Length: 85
Image 1 (cartoon, helix red, strand yellow):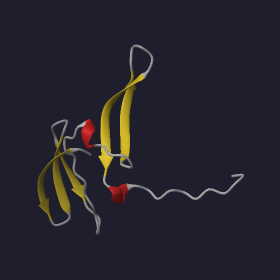
Image 2 (cartoon, one colour; image 1 turned 180 degrees about the horizontal axis):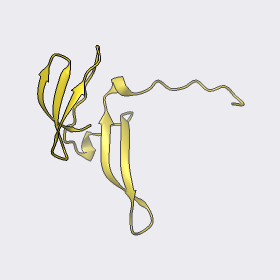
Image 3 (tube, one colour; image 1 turned 90 degrees about the vertical axis):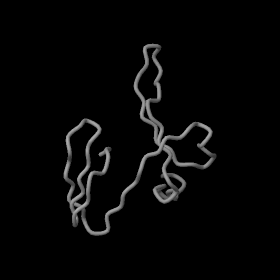
Image 4 (spheres, one colour; image 1 turned 60 degrees about the vertical axis):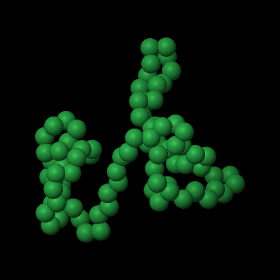
């Protein structure tokens, strides 16, 4: 969910969504939150963990509509591989 935080009472977080209405979220113990900030392509460094949302273009390829640069703590550890698997 994306939006603007309106309030926090106890374990209930109220968010004004990008679509307009408020949403009330019941938070579990130990919850975590991440924010979104504007960045440029120059902010992306080698080794950064990124996610890309794209849509097909009229020319047949894909065009990125959003690129997210995740903090290192959200990067999953590399999976060990075994030859033959």
